[in-house]
Image (cartoon, rainbow, N blue to C red):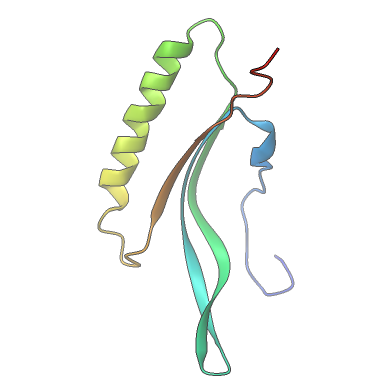
Length: 94
């Protein structure tokens, strides 16, 4: 439990992964009568390293999973759910 009383199952540093599929929304709070973004609430996170042996299949599967997550969360009660897919290509100039 953190200082605000929130519980978190796992903290994942997604910067170390090659592919990150994440579903999240922003919670908001009122400050001086103005609604502002408070914190990112992650509903699902699928981090993975690149499969150099079968990269095409892996990317096809992650795109399919992205589509399924969009279908799953499109009726989420919050209404402002984001599905984010990050594919990192590092050292492309070598």
